[in-house]
Image (tube, rainbow, N blue to C red; front, side):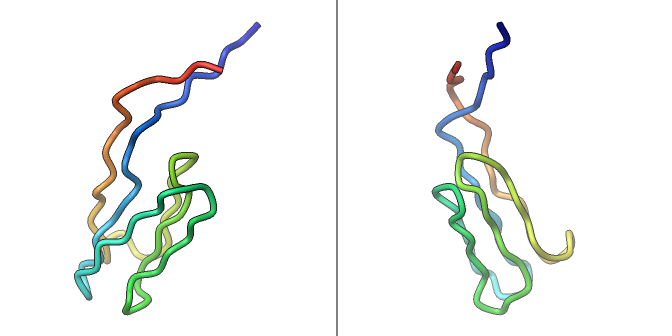
Length: 70
């Protein structure tokens, strides 16, 4: 039987290079835009989703410090 291993306790965040906002998604489907609307973050601790041009934001996400096995 295959087991899925998921990282836990990580930060899912970016900083907009245009308006300077730091936006963080804290739970699944916690979709947030920066104040200027150039970029967005989503996914919480379930997945990483980014909206916007790569040059418009700086990645601030940190890897999990633990692993959870299902």
